[in-house]
Image (cartoon, rainbow, N blue to C red; front, side, top):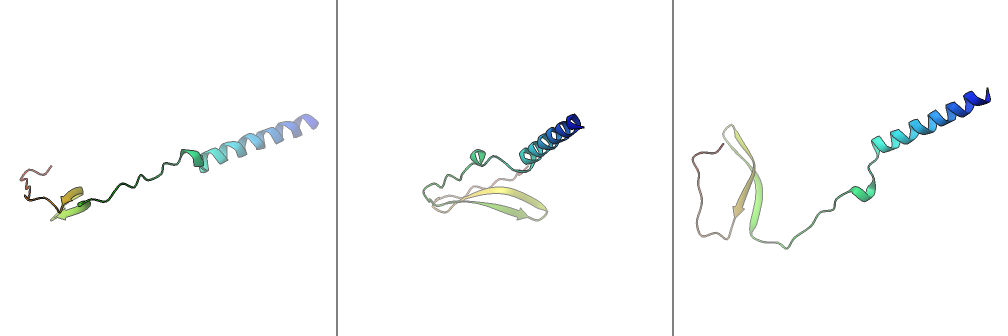
Length: 72
């Protein structure tokens, strides 16, 4: 009966160890944001009719506008 108790305790500890690794990330592996100096360029999402463009870059300081006819 003692061997079964040791085996059961070992199995419980192994199970708990795998649950912690699956559900909780290592806090030292979390990346931090690198906040850069502000400028006059903005990244936004756009929608033109049914077409959704997830990322578009706007340069408010540009002298010219760029248009394209062939948006994929």
